[in-house]
Length: 324
Image (cartoon, rainbow, N blue to C red):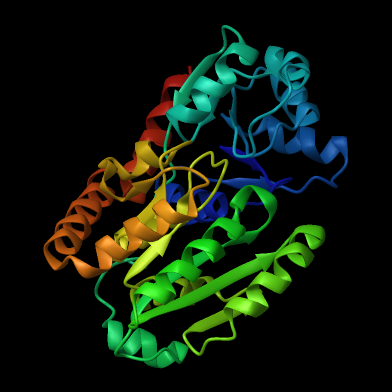
């Protein structure tokens, strides 16, 4: 199997190089190599896997008779993009049924397979003691931690979270808000700077802007009592299943992929409604029986549906079906 890395998602690199390599040999192709070198690589492989809609690589693979799998990580795409690459792709893979329904009319008759993203249960699990995670992150022990961890960009709707947390902090003395974000859209970050500054005036808010090592991300989820996603658009939502795998209940909008991921609607709030988000969060944190029930349900769901070993097996079966 040959994998293009023009769009080198961390998840894809992990899945293909750390899991699937046990049964397949993987070769990654950087986008800057010349056509002669690309062709030499392509002649030696059985399947070409695209993490981006790399028309050039898809066309060259098809000219050599190689089956092509294209994963739509960054959908939606305009219909014209699919029109240009459809002839060279055998199968499109999408990470959710939501993405499939949004793209299938534009793709046409091409085969679309849903393979969810997966989570490494050896890295993301409930085994790290909460007290240890909080000590390492400098978070107090005797508080209820509400975590937001995402890119700071318009579609992630950090403004909704900020407004909701203003209400939560007024209503719950033990509430503590931890925001970890990556400022990827400067204009939007400039827009939320002032609300963030105002929210941080209380000692019950901690804000970390920037990257942290991937190995430390489980500490964030284990330190939190609740993880909140506020995305307006999401093809999957990897952070949600990472939190669920760590035994941290997830509150998310009742839209896009979240009903598909989370399953039960108990912790789904009305999209764009800060008050409903606040009320769902407060109810979860103040009702111990409900909290334990949601935690158990979500943890069981992620272990059953999103374990990366299971996801890897689905890719193996897809590759095998394409190799003649």
